[in-house]
Image (tube, rainbow, N blue to C red):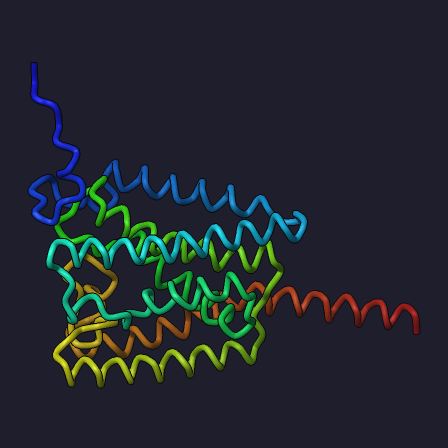
Length: 255
């Protein structure tokens, strides 16, 4: 009889199993599971306030618990280091402000969560930085959940709670993110880190691989960030245009 599989291999830091396979069968199953969970959460559209609030609090708790579990795991296995655990990556910042926004429905927080919490985390779900940890190792699951729940949270506030960005929020988010990126780059240069990948590409396959060498890939990264924001605003711009045209038509008929 074959020996039973040691389940602790899926949580230990000294993992020696198969590495993470991008778009492998386990990754695809995880993507489907995240999509189904997102669809299940979005069913709260049109529900009463108490039900919607429970949904928001559930997502906020998942973000916080998932993030804290990573810090606890890293500390337990002696992997908590300033070069990867400080809350400076954009997605990490979004975890904390996203949880706050889910609880408070803060409009400014929502703007950043909507514009930055979909495009960036989507890349994190499709090409996760899980290192050598293959699914279903804790580190791989935690990485996918961190990014996946951010996307669901942004969509939840938009679809279920009816929040929406404005043209002014487009400018605020672009300017705010650019300033934050500059600040993080200064911190990276000062303490020898690489948060937001401004000092070098991540050690996994990513979109940055096709954007040229450092530091030149930062230019298309910024440009793509702006395009991402504009594309995410496009549905709202189009809806506003349709309403304006409908209103103008009604006004013309009444006149």
